[in-house]
Image 1 (cartoon, protein in one colour):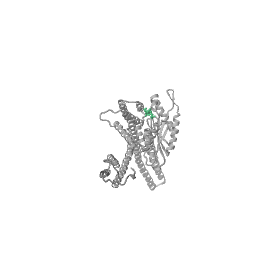
Image 2 (cartoon, helix red, strand yellow; image 1 turned 30 degrees about the horizontal axis):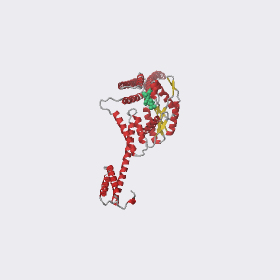
Image 3 (cartoon, rainbow, N blue to C red; image 1 turned 120 degrees about the horizontal axis):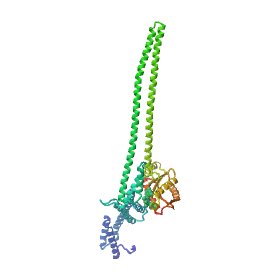
Image 4 (tube, protein in one colour; image 1 turned 135 degrees about the vertical axis):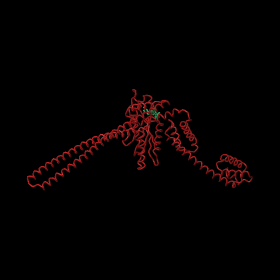
Length: 497
Ligand SMILES: Nc1nc2c(ncn2[C@@H]2O[C@H](COP(=O)(O)OP(=O)(O)OP(=O)(O)O)[C@@H](O)[C@H]2O)c(=O)[nH]1
């Protein structure tokens, strides 16, 4: 409609168009806002009169426009909240440790699409359906009706957890062979019953290990208590000897005093020099005899004390060396519980300890800190084609090369399965990326040879670093997403986020 068609009053054609527009708007917006409903009703009643004037309609049109703008702002705000809420719900889902295998990748994929820039909120709706599907899928695998059998995905997740648990323990004794064969068994695909048996064996093994440790601790405590009681006896003997000797010494001293007094009174009472000479001679002989006795007694006491002291010292030395041995064993145990027994790299528990430490340092000093996750490409194929022993060997060689290619200050651990995690203290994402690229090239050029076939094995990695307000979990999640990208883009590459 152009304004020059009007002289303040519209014709019947315009009124019909306007009426239709208002009807449609009324239908589309009914119930959204009381304000809009009210003004549209007023406009409608004004258009019903014969003296319809645009001027009379205008304030109602303005009010409808304003109410529509307010509504639009409210809808956008709600959509934004739904968008952000879905992102954090998916992140939460990704943090859930018991995600069924494969679910993590699908969830990360939806999250990635949700995080990409949106051109309009209508693009959000199909993504919301994906979010709901992810949660439905996860709920249907994790909440099973009572009595329903767990599915293969559950067995697989449980098997993975058991494998990770067994990677954190190590025994030297007879249990070590059982542990090794249990680990091998867990590399096969197990059905429910086999998995249950493996769980029972793992429990038996852990109990056996604990008992062995307890016995060895008891043995040590028994020998410590033996040693202490023999030291105690020796000490009591030394005190007794000292008491006996002190009594004898006191008697001897009294005798000596008496002899000296006798000598003095002999000197006073002597009537002739000859008599004095005779008496003095007798007393001096007595005194010197007593002195010789005293000296012998003192020597005897010293010797006895020396003997007893050296007995005590020998026993204490025994206890000390036993305690040293026990201390060494305990620190070896602690080291082992933080070490992966196959690759000899630190394990996941060690990584968590180290990451916490580096995170605290990062919070205090704000020096750059990066984390990377590296994963062997198509590792399952190596296991399936050349056997698990070849798979194990591959893990050891790659672990070695990864460690050798990085710096001493970088912390490399076997996180689980064929996954390694690296913490790069005081390092930016860019530097960590370059270091990982170098490691990737070196690993790719290792000449692996299995069953007379030369093969090259590659890794993919994802890296990310801490930015303001980050938490370790968030950085780890970004590194994991970057790894997922590297795998998706064709593997044998490093990706950063
Ligand atoms: N030999 C051996 N295999 C292991 C060990 N831990 C995990 N695995 C195997 O590693 C394989 C991992 O396979 P997937 O998760 O499918 O991954 P992939 O084949 O490497 O494929 P992409 O990661 O997608 O490139 C599984 O077959 C596990 O049984 C281990 O300690 N020794």
